[in-house]
Image 1 (cartoon, helix red, strand yellow):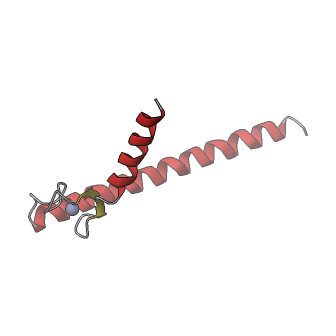
Image 2 (image 1 turned 120 degrees about the horizontal axis):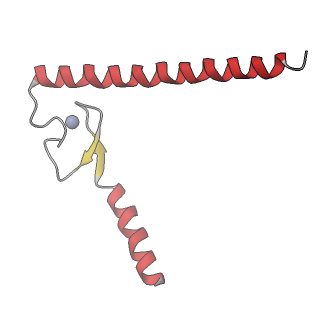
Length: 84
Ligand SMILES: [Zn+2]
């Protein structure tokens, strides 16, 4: 039982060293995977499109966070207004 857990932990720890961040696409991939599994098959144009798409995804997440922030403020103000 404990041996199994220890083995799993060792596996996870060892696995960490096999990951590196790709300089081209910025994603983590296996060292054994060279060229990188994400962008290895892409040419420069495809990579550019891929990075643009990822950037848009990050922007989308930010605006979603902003929306939730605004909702939280509105709820807070509504709660506060009931006290006055
Ligand atoms: Zn890559």
